[in-house]
Structure formats: structure tokens, C-alpha cells
Length: 231
Image (cartoon, rainbow, N blue to C red; front, side, top):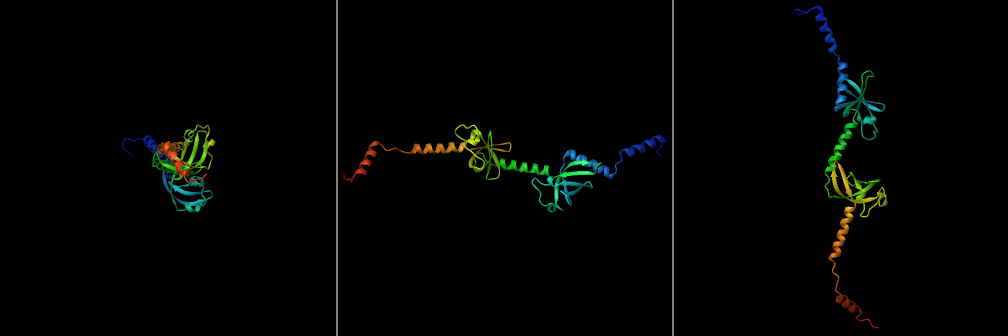
């Protein structure tokens, strides 16, 4: 016993050490709770297949990844995931029930959103693209473009004439040609009207280039046509 330490002091030191001591299991669950709070990405390897999901171990604790949280779409064959390395987050921690739920879905959604935003930002304003009308709303028409992206044709950009609803001139499934008029916040603004206006402007320009012959030339031409005709 250290000099000047009484039995009471020694007892308090022992109590303090027990209060701060955690076995490996308790520490693991605390780490998992911290990981859930921080929403950290974890790399795990699938080491088991169970009903409606797969098993992976984190901090020495077996975690369950439901099939609905493995991918953005439907998972047809869970066996394809056995031995596969996945990026997951802790979705649920319950030490009392020995329950650890992991999920890939949130990470996959963020990656898909980032990829989509990058693809949208790569589209040049002024591009003319082919597409198909996906859906009609009161405020405009959503068009699926040939590159797989979607954009909105606002109701004011559908026709040269004012319309109250896109369904006046468009139907779902219609093939359309659109012009990209804006790219902002990962979204594409499209226009059908801009192409109509360009076509009309070109037509007017062609008309202006046409030279109408003078009356004398027209008369002469008619006279030439009547030559040789016997009455």
C-alpha cells in the first residue's frame, strides 16, 4: 500500500477502477452506439446467409443486414452476397436484445444521387436531345432523356400558345425533342417551345430570302406558256 494511503482511500480507488472498467463486450456495444450516432461507413464481409438477409460481423458482434437494405432494388439471390465485401452503416443497436442491424441502402442512395448530379452537371445548356414523356403534372411534363436522365419541361415551355395543362398537347409515352435551357442544383430544365420558336424563325428567314418576280416577268412567262397553243 502506498505511503499515507488509508484503507478507506484504497477502497475508493478499487471502486473507481471497477466503475471505469468495461469488459470487451460492453466496449464493443458502446463502439457500435457511437458508430450509429456518427453514421460512419464501415467495411464488412458477408459471412453468412439467413432467412431474408445476410450476416456480417462488426466489433466482434454478429450483425444482420436485411435483404431490403442490401441494395436499392430487389435482391433475387442472397447467395451472391456470400463472401462479398460491403459498405454499411449501423441502423439499429440494442444490447439487451443482442440486436445489431446494418444497412447498405443509405450509402447506395447517396452514391447514386452523387453520380446523377455529376451526370446532370455534365449536360451542356443548349443541348438538343430526344426523350419520352414520363409523367404529366399541372406544372409541367417530366421527360426521360435518351441518356437516362430526366428533366422538367415547365408548362410555359411546352407550346408557343398558352395552355392550362400539359395534357392539352402531350400524353405519357410521347416521343419529344427538347432543348436544355438550364442546369441548376442537379436538375435539368427543358423546353419544347424553344425548338418551335427556332423552327419558325428559320422558316421566316427562308421566306425573306425568296425573291418574288416582277409583274412583267410573270406576264412574259405566261405568254411563253401560251405560245404554240392553237385556238
